[in-house]
Length: 250
Length: 208
Image 1 (tube, rainbow over the protein chains, first blue to last red):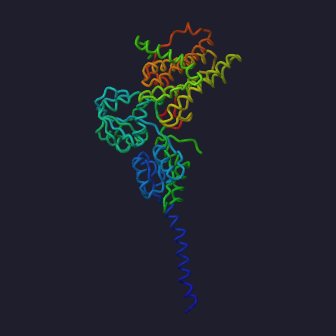
Image 2: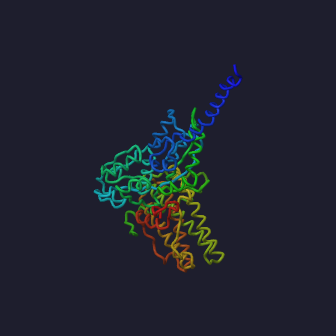
């Protein structure tokens, strides 16, 4: 047999191995699977459109990751969920990458005649609120206790939504007279809703945290690259433009 | 904006005031155990207001000390008020801890232009702030549901009333001639406090 022919399969194997070792991680790095809070549904794809995204309530996503869902990155709307995964050894130490404010959304037509958060004291309105287990629900309840307004959850008809997008939909469709969301969600639906500002002194600290998920087969390099993109200048600019607050660089 | 204290509230306030006056002895008495505040749902409003207001007051005293023209004694007096506010902040942060830590970075504090341009303006601004804080604390002592939270608010009220008297004295008046402070409801009090706060990181005016 011609030695040159004998060499060919070996060369081919080597070439294939090279392609596999170089191309597979590159492809993986390009497309990690990102599980992120629903309030990030517009900003994250703008920062990077390549990953596969799963947007939902942070508590639901945490549960899915605990059950072995194939996430590479987890971004939660409060430290509670990311820190719980970290403590369980399921993700790297979370870092804060954005902050937010709460607002009261009302439909453009404002059929409930809601002028301020204090209007809700009179009761009898349809109010969209996140359920207690989801960050927007927990933040809303903290806000109301800081305003001495927890009674409005009893005197109005309250829906418990599983994530912030549900609250926005209810208000935008006119199924609720008002709803508590983040300021960034008010911007997303600005053509259908108006945002009523909530006093600054009573705002609970809303902090978003992100971490790389630890599991067998996780795309760790892709996750790190994505997190770096979110925290880089361009990522921060996009988040800022969307209305998020930014922590100091660190 | 400011409201009269109703008779029943005044009696209640008097009782709490006595508790507050005795609280110091109680907390410092050997073997005495302070009861930690466990705010009822809506009591958090007074704790949160207090924390934010004490942050603003602390920032005010810092700048007043740095930028005002004071004698050594006056400066020491202002520094005592500032240190008192720092202690209050620690207390209130401890109570609020279950709701998530509040950081100084969470708020940017701004005072009206010219606040620190003269001794008179500094003292006027200081009195305005302390009156606001004292007024809302009176409302809190009257309305807080948890007894230990009421006691805490009464202690803070006592301390801030002292700061207010101190500022009046620096302005050449005595506390007795500057009038008895009345309660300020939380809602208008909060709106007034809001005028000192900014969220620097929020663009387009949401935080402005």
